[in-house]
Length: 295
Ligand SMILES: [Zn+2]
Image 1 (cartoon, rainbow, N blue to C red):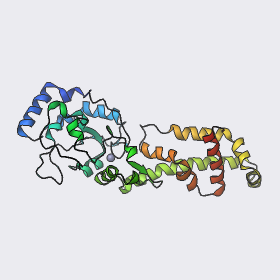
Image 2: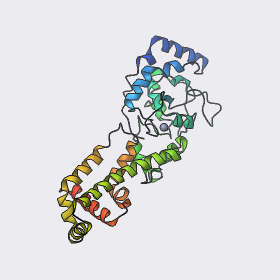
Image 3: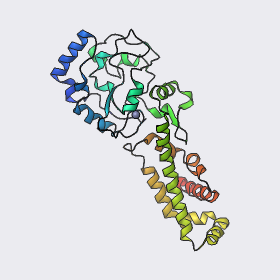
Image 4: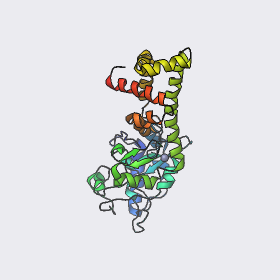
């Protein structure tokens, strides 16, 4: 999960059109949101969310490959899990700040869950108090992280295996992981593949360095006498590698938060998992020099 930037004052026109507002009036009278999918699920909404979320799921950050990404209501519109008396937040069915882009699996897992720590809003607040950042909405103290309002990095962190964890036992991080099932096996597998690809990239380059030598003996002679000399001799290769690895943090990439965790914890998550000691030593030295700015 990464924080995204959405202009809450600029909803797609379909969400504020005359006919949609008329429909909202009907919904308010009926106190239930039914037969409205064609509006919040409109192509305009999907395209706008697609740009904001880089065609990735708001929760799991996997790129949405299916033909039809799903428009998810952060606050459920029809009913609420664990609260049968609540009608659902029907008044937010067309509310731009309540709509996120979601993959089908996260959407199906979250369903009608919306746990809070504060006071539940059970009836529609005034029109100008319905945005996700409005006082009445904030007073609910949602436990589910909202990538448009919260910085997930403050609540979540990753293990090198690809498992996502609540940062320092953070309750919102913990609840979000549970409600969305962010450690389902396929997600761990995909994140682990990202880590493996990065490690493999460094290993391949280290092997190329050996190939530059006439034979293994020549390499290890240098290695035992002065591994720093190898790092200096291959300065360009190492600096290119680091630069490319850390440029690779564009929010448009799947699992960007995990890629960032690999970069932020480079020693523990990348260097330490290299199998051979010479790989760890050389990359460790190169990393030190890169951090000192002397590579
Ligand atoms: Zn997802």
